Length: 103
Image 1: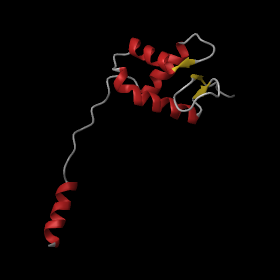
Image 2: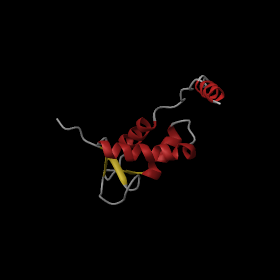
Image 3: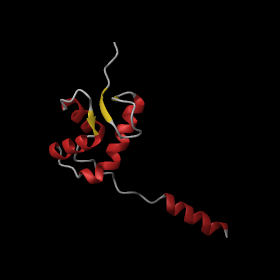
């Protein structure tokens, strides 16, 4: 009984996967930073405005990228790349701007 099980395990691991196809667009965090840096509002840019900018300037489907945009914003706030302008909101809600670099 052990021989068929070991053969089954080997056949599952020996299976090759398809090569990953690179995306045709810039990384999501770069698109988000570009949208925030080009915004003229001193109070920061909101998520709907970021999505409008990405949809207008990049050839991407914003609906498909929505979870990636949200996750990218949350990660950027946690790492200090972006700053939430007011302490209102959680996650990707509120307005954001690019953090100032400390010297």
